[in-house]
Length: 126
Image 1 (cartoon, rainbow, N blue to C red):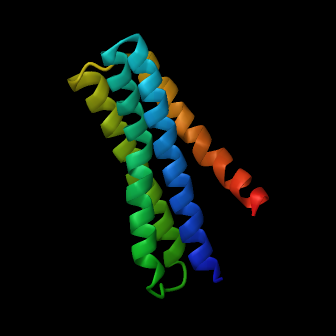
Image 2: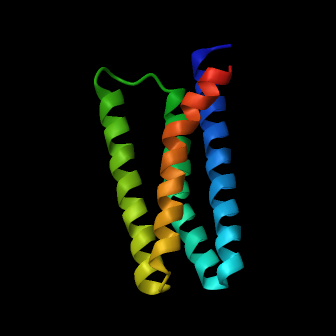
């Protein structure tokens, strides 16, 4: 199996685990109150959707042969876009929709922790 195919499978698995994480946490917060559940889902989306966009960008650029030094710039640009997208999602959730802070923050941080821990767990399994 090629390295690029393996990385696509790993990225897809991490994204699915993140999705399951924030949907589960959102369902648990919904048991307390529906607005808490919606806020948790918003926090999960604010962490997950920028990762999905970044992965689509990475997969799209994977087939191209970039010029020397361009890979680092593409990665840096993708990370900057990911951070800006996250900030915009969080600002809209808190400012426009009036999300409850704690469920939003807990779910957002949980998805980020999964992003760090899941690849290590998946690599140790395989």
